[in-house]
Amino acid sequence: MKRAVVFLIIFMFLSLGLVKAEEVELTLDEALAIAMRDNRDVLLKAQDVRKAKARIAESNAALLPSLNFTGSLTDSRGLYSKDFTQTTAQATLKQYIYKGAKTINTIEQNKYKKEVAQALLDKAKLELGLSVYKAFYTLSLSQDLSILNKGIVDNTQEHLSSIKERYKNGEASESDILTIENSLASVKEVHTSSVNQAEVAGSLLNNLLYLDKDAKIKPRAEFNYQASEIAYDQAFLKTMQSRPEIRQYETQLKADKKAVQIAKADTRPSIYASWDYYSRSHVAAGTTRNWNDYNVIGLTFSWPVFDGWATKSKVEQALVDLKETELTKQKVGGDIALELKEAYLSLKDAIAKLQASETDLKVYADNLSGAREKYSFGIISLLDMNDANLKYEVSVFNKKQAIYDYILAKASFDKATGGF
Image 1 (cartoon, rainbow, N blue to C red):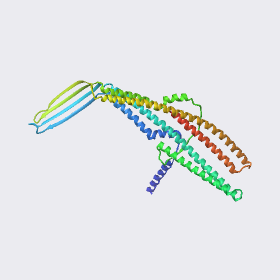
Image 2 (image 1 turned 90 degrees about the vertical axis):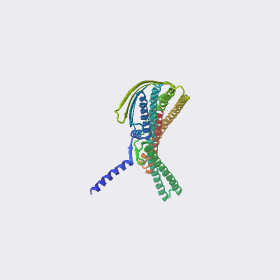
Image 3 (image 1 turned 30 degrees about the horizontal axis):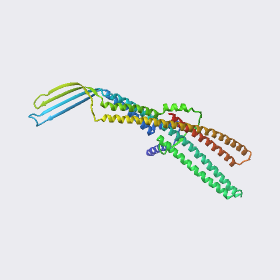
Image 4 (image 1 turned 135 degrees about the vertical axis):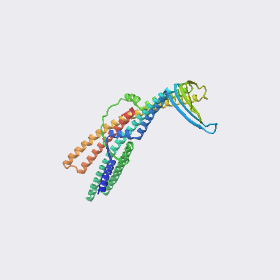
């Protein structure tokens, strides 16, 4: 009996887990939060930032002295008349005073590289945010479309039933039935296609959020908007200040300039101070231990006079990298300006479509109101009123689609300017 109860409890927990895995209700903010927390592209870029911080700490270590200790014990037998044991120990303290400014430039370069890594992380978040926006609203709209298409299928089915009744009474021809049946097959195909589109959109959103592939997301999307005119010139200035790609290449330019100085440092002198402590003992069989301790303090100056033009080649490579970064920065700036212009024009088109959809909605709402009044007086049939209601629902969906276009256009525009 006890085993049966335990099995029942386990089964209940598994069942709850399956239910939770099947349907997940999310708002847009929740979806964005999950994506920023779990999406692997963002997590990988975050690790790059951590690695860049570690490189800064590594390069700072060159400013500190180094201390090394070496010890050895040797035992020689059969070589001399007496067996011989030798113990040695050495401690070396070394501090670089000057390395051709290589250390300082390396530290600065790694700081700039960390800023580049942060800009790449911000870029990944920006692109992921836009992808989640699109997938979230696309899923919501496609689910609404499948519901609307189901209503069209049902309405067409009602028309087919009505025409068959009229055919029995001799009020309709067989050709009328075939026409409706053809329409029914078409709307069923459209309905199936819309269901498949919703499933694809759900899979895409699952992938972005790294949810279980079998989880079914139920988006709580709000199709609200406040359309307002946007000044393109102000948006352009904001874009040039806020886009992470601009920051990325500006800091990459600084890092590349430091790379040139690091390469040049190989032909400059270096100076370091050192302190060495030595301890040796020589012990022959039958004798007492003989210690010999001493220490050396030194200042070493080194200047590489000729290295076969290896440093010259390194400098040339660093200068080429610098030039490539400058050209890439110019290209990226042009691409961002084009992206902003396209997003701006798409947003203006979306606002125009919103105004047109609102006019259509008013027309079909008025037609539905008139149809209901006529139905109450028995002037039209229930099927006629259902037709008017379906047309109104289609116009409601068309307005929702116009809002959807506006939301995505606004999201693309905000992304183009550097943030939501």
